[in-house]
Image (cartoon, each protein chain N blue to C red):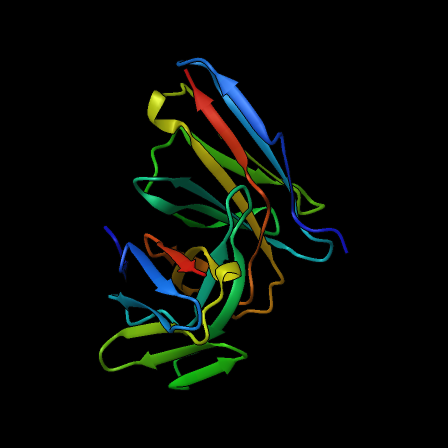
Length: 110
Length: 114
C-alpha cells in the first residue's frame, strides 16, 4: 500500500526553468514532510522539509508548497541548474515512521 | 562529525543464504531506520530502532530482522535470501527529540542475490 504518491516519474527541464514535483498522501496523522535529493551511488540527502502548520517554506531556490486540506505538497525548484539533475523523493512521517514517494528523476538540460 | 557508515558497501550472496548488514549512526543519534531501495518499488521502510527497541515496522516478511546495540549501532539480517531481495539497503539515523527530525542516510549496502 503506497501511502505517498509522487508524480511525475521523470522530468526534463531546461536550464533556468522551474521544476515542479507533486506528492499526495493519505494518512492524516503524518506531521513531517521532507524532500530528499539523491545522486547516483549516494544515499538520499535532506533538501528541505515542512510541517503541516505552514503552507509554504522557501530555502534558496527550493520551495515547498503544502495544502493540508487536499493532502498534497509540492517541490518547486526555481532557476533549475544542470547540477540539480538527480532523483527527488518526497516523504511523509509520523513518529519517525517515514514513508517515501516513488521518486522523480529530474534532468536539467544546459 | 562522521556521517552514517554502512558496511559492507557491496555484497554478493547465493539464494538461501543469510546476510547481516551493519550501520553505525552519527554520534549522538539514537534512532536508526532501515530502508530497501529498488528501481521498481522505490524506498521501502523496513524498521526503526530506538534505544535497542524496535519502534516501527514496515510490511516485510519475518525473514527481515534487525537489532540495535547499546551504542546505537544497528544490524539488519535477511535469512533465506531470495533473488528479489537484491537491492540497495539504506540506513538512516536521526536525533530523537520526540518529534520527527532530519534523517541522515548512509551510502547503503548494495546486495546482489544470485
